[in-house]
Length: 230
Picture (cartoon, rainbow, N blue to C red):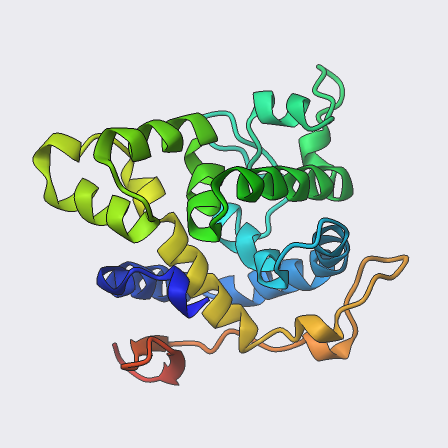
C-alpha cells in the first residue's frame, strides 16, 4: 500500500484520518459496523482474488453505513451507482434496491473492482476509476498524457488547463483509502475475521478508535496513531 500514496498527498491522507475522529463516539460506531460486515466482504474479495485491504474501502465510501445514499444517486455500503448496479447483476425496483443488501452489493462491488483492475492493470488507477467511472478516468489519462495516478494528480493540481479534468473527490480518493487502511489495519485483524452465519468477526476484530487521536507521517510514509493535540 505504501506505493499507492502519491508523496504530495500525505496531507490529504492526514486530513481524512483526522476527520474520522470527529464526533463523539463516531469511531466506535464505525468499528462496530466494520466488525459486522468484514466477514462477507473478505469472502467476496477472496472469491475474486482481490487484495484483502480493499475490505476497508467502505470506510471511504460510506463509513460502513449500509443505508447511505449520495446526492449523485450512489447507494449502500459500496456507494454503487444505478447503472453499475444493473451491469453487475443487482436489481433496482420501486420495492427492492439490492444495493442495500450487504452480501449482494459486496459481491457486485468486488466484481466491479476486479473488472477495473483488469482494465487498468494498476490498483491506484482502478480505485480512482471506481470513484469517477472508468470512462471518465480513461478520458483524463488520454487528455493529460499521464500514465500513473500520481502523475495524473500532479497534472490536475498544477496545470490550470487540467484543473477540471477530474473532480477533487477523485483526486483525493486513493490517499483517503490509504489512510483508511492505515487506521483500520492497526485496529482490526482481518486475518482473524472469518465467515459466520451471523456475519460477525471473532474477538480479534475488536478495538476502539482512540479519542483525540492524531496521525503523523513518518519518513517512510507510515501512519502512527498518537494521543494528544494535532
